[in-house]
Image (cartoon, rainbow, N blue to C red; front, side, top):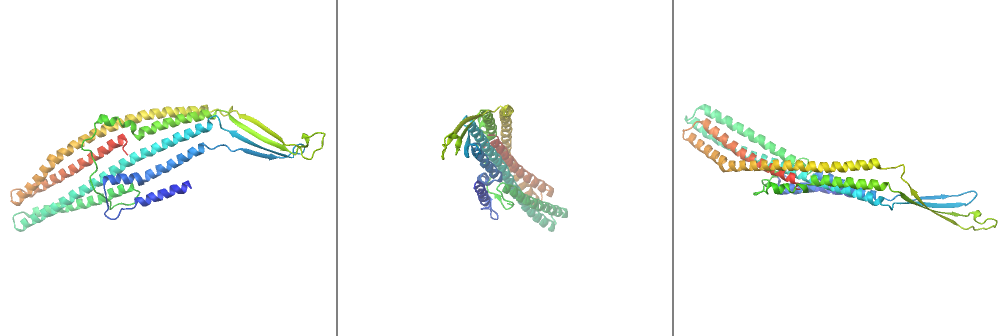
Length: 410
């Protein structure tokens, strides 16, 4: 029943993943994150592991079966019966359940770790798609300007106001711009397919990013973010793993305790119970015994030492994970700050100046005051400035995604 339930959930998630992706469909940054949180194949797998770990709790609480015996004898009782019941009343069952519960807690935190990783990967994939779309827009704009410039230059060549070589140069530049725009367009489909894979879609080539990735206007201070590293699921996973190892130590120690065994039986139709006196219905003899299974030969010392070593390893991993995340957070935060500064400089100064220079160079060429090469150089500088701004915005978004990953945003 549980397996059928899990299979139904997976099928339902797959159906949901493929809903709403018609031709030329768009998705926002927030929608991409939310969709991946529900239907990402990695998270579906992680949640099924939780089901396995949850079932282990029930297995740990399973009681041993009683033993029932029936026999006969040629000299005494013609019918004998008995039942032997092991009693786990010295904490063995509770310790086993506690250990499995601790393992289940670790598995649940592992799912949170997967959610953090999936969110960061989806966010990076969305930024890549958004960047690719921006490059296409800029390349298509450059191709349109190259087409306009070729028409203008050819008109001047036809009037004898420009050399034929200018017409050839403008034509070559237009072909290059068209080829570059076509290549960039194909890269958009590749980026869309990469993003769609996180939604469980085999090919999402028509998927498009609707808005830019979210970046805080006023990010929190680095010191405030560092204080939240302890809540990162990657750190809590190591902490939970340590607690699980300690719970297994308790379980192994409980298994060393004796197991009580209750043995109940009866003997019927035993003529020896009425010696010297013939009787047709001898009394029934009832038996009872209390035994103890002494664990002389099943000492758990090696198992206890192993789990104690696992607990020590978990504490060491937690400390190392904190250090790694703190370093990653500091690096990502400062990278974010650097790219944000670069974005402002490009947006406020470089790009407007490049646009103005390109417009002035084209006007000067039209008036015969500048050579064609000056126009082409100015246009290339404008394109490079706009692409640099797009790259800076993308890098800023990627750096902030790394910051969120370091603090465990999911």
